[in-house]
Length: 105
Image 1 (cartoon, one colour):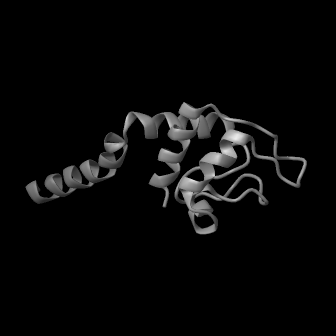
Image 2: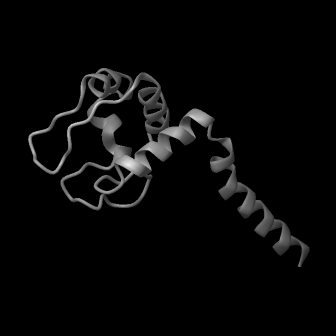
């Protein structure tokens, strides 16, 4: 009985640790992604993107070094398909989003 309780507690702590360990910058980046990107892109480590042509954020580091995305985010991202809106981020938003993207690598 005690072993079962301890195992349940260990599992709960293990699943809660990543959320508790996220820095404020990573949390702000996740919130930005949730509010601005999640309509089309998967912003977590497992789910598919709601829009099939939108790459999941967890795969971006395979295409581009995350650090190099900052310049594109500052200048504005424009894509060849009409469903992706053009947008430009402020420097603090860029830092937050890049910090969050690094957690998905």
